Amino acid sequence: MSIPPKTLVLRLSSIGDIVLSSALLRTLRTAAGREARIDYVVRKEYADLVRYNHHLSVVHVYDPASGFDGLKTLAGELRREGYGLVVDIHDSIRTKLLRAACRAERTVVIDKRKMERWLLVNLKRNAYDGIVSVAERYIETVAPFGVAYDGKGLEIFIPDAVQFDVSGRMAKLRLDRFETVIGLCPGSRHFTKRWQTEKFAEVGLRAAKELKAKVLLFGGPGENGDCSVVERTIAAGAGADTVTNFAGSFSLLESAAALEFCDAVVTNDSGLMHLAAAKQKKTVAVFGSTVREFGFAPFGTEAVVVEEEGMECRPCTHIGRRDCPKGHFHCMNGITADRVFTAVTSLLAHR
Image 1: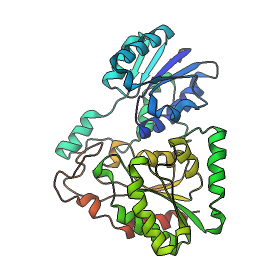
Image 2: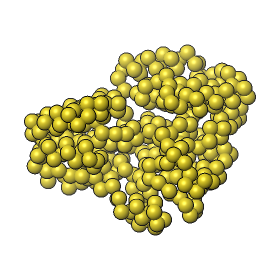
Image 3: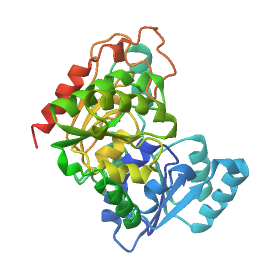
Image 4: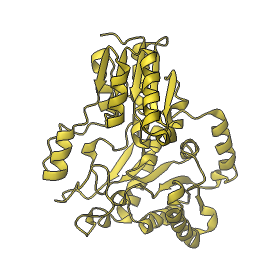
């Protein structure tokens, strides 16, 4: 089955999901050819993650602030484009409306394994057929059109101006004075996906002392507080010159550009984890309430997932929670800084 001349991909949010779609866009472009048109619909706050993607023709931006009227306007615009194929890898209420509005000849929708997910979260019964990344699930959506994974991992496209600016800022740090560079990403949107800040600080301090590393801290504006705690701990124990805190001062693309300078990244199950994977960085990911079966482990890069396996209450969610439903938070409390630091040194030994 051939791919129509005009294809639309729907994925409104969030950071990790959009970055994971980069493998789909590349393989879809390969199968469709350079002359085909491949467009994408994304929420305004995440648009930069796909705006510069070389495999896309047009990026349609949905602004949530425009409400239902804005959604209807966008739906009308998409209908007039006359897409032959709509690929919905979000399958939300909004994307259902948009894909119906397109009236495309063919529409395909992601299989989110909702039943398997429900069974694992609620009954702790694992009905998954192995661990399959969401990136690969996106591609299997268009497998009937001859699209297959090419083994090249994820991508993030960064404009030259952003790359040059970040490179200039990194040059001022004189990273060549250090034996290695370690990135730490202590934040995550949900509490049950956040490893303790003091343990990130311990890993960073040991890296600075034992590996003679420079530690770079990454996070959004709301994560600057936790990153500042980590920064102060490392600075007090190893010297202010061994750590730099970029939390709240970098955009998503600037963070991706800066991650390029890291030899290894330690992160929670978060959007920054997927950005690190897209830059093919060695990644140590700390998983608490979520598990790899959901498909969100680091993809396409050398990585270690550190988790408390065998817990009867885990997973308690597939997206994260505001608090531990059992009150003990053993899934994160049980993971020591020593385990994570050992994972870091193991990855770095493969350089």
